[in-house]
Picture 1 (cartoon, rainbow, N blue to C red):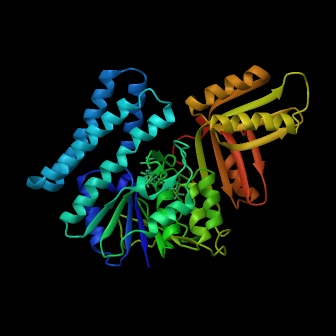
Picture 2 (picture 1 turned 180 degrees about the horizontal axis):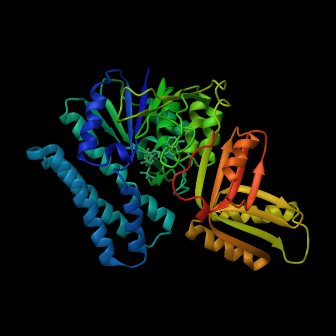
Picture 3 (picture 1 turned 180 degrees about the vertical axis):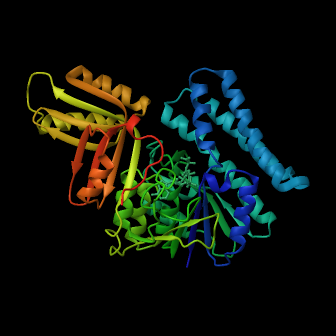
Length: 430
Ligand SMILES: Nc1ncnc2c1ncn2[C@@H]1O[C@H](COP(=O)(O)OP(=O)(O)O)[C@@H](O)[C@H]1O
Ligand SMILES: N[C@@H](CC(=O)OP(=O)(O)O)C(=O)O
């Protein structure tokens, strides 16, 4: 049965990493194997900056950024292929030329459309290099264009999958022993227009393909051995969760654990396809497995920090109630702004929203709310979410920190703190 592997930006950030990826794949003989790859390193951020420079009319900055992208990708090609650089370098040059041409052609279009036509090149470049390298390393490989495989609507930057059309395309894939390499994060409409699935969406791409192929398993290869009960970069005593359920993993991802894209779990859960999170740096390290089994979910409390949050306290101006009609109006504006509230709390005359401080989306929302309501705002906050906490743990986590908003139900507790009280490394009180 089919295996789906997903490799993120960190696992292919340069030539050395791509070589290690080749060594890793050479150890896996099981076929069919679909390999979903993100853009190299921080290329998607670089493409976003390129787009911003162009849309703000900074032509020199745009040219410099395009040249940096070209140079960085060609440097990886030269390091990998040495004297045999020619054909791969030509394909990379052709993609950079096509990126520039498409970007110019669509410069007058609305930003989300322009974004998708530009930013999709990160994954097109990385998969071109990776698949050529696997061939070079002796593995029969086929490069697939995810824009022709993952069929979506035209909701640019957050495209919705047409599951039936995608399943039909995927079923048409040839069944032979080649490794199929394709792009994460990107798709295409039935008319052939490029789309993207949302930032960090390559995990979701792997899940879409696995769902449509009824795959045996999805493996996400990371720079950590698996899923931990807190980000090991921020918590010095985080522990690995060896087995958790789809539901628990969705909760962690939804609350902001930046290790799996939240949309990944749904398509896998529907077909009971297990998700394994493994280290690409240490193949012997025991992985984490996410599946149907819920028995281990409550054993270890899990913590998620969401930084750079903004708290908006919205009140009707005329001492009126914050009734359902007003809540509907305010939450409707939130949906239109494309913002997610990590915490929502209501009072008789107040609706409090904790939002990602994403200026491009937040500022128009605040302006629109200020026109009709009294709005109080606090920036630079950190939202802590704890799953399966007891009172003692919550009290210890809150000690010395001012709680600006709180919410608690049977399995989840949230506290909003000033960001200044949350910097640096945390220790989970035991
Ligand atoms: N609960 C968690 N468990 C494991 N890693 C986590 C968790 N929360 C955040 N992370 C961070 O996720 C990082 C890996 O994800 P990411 O950088 O998005 O990988 P990629 O882009 O390669 O897919 C780790 O380096 C780790 O710091
Ligand atoms: N390259 C895209 C998609 C993605 O999922 O990347 P990564 O797997 O490196 O987080 C992004 O940066 O948003």
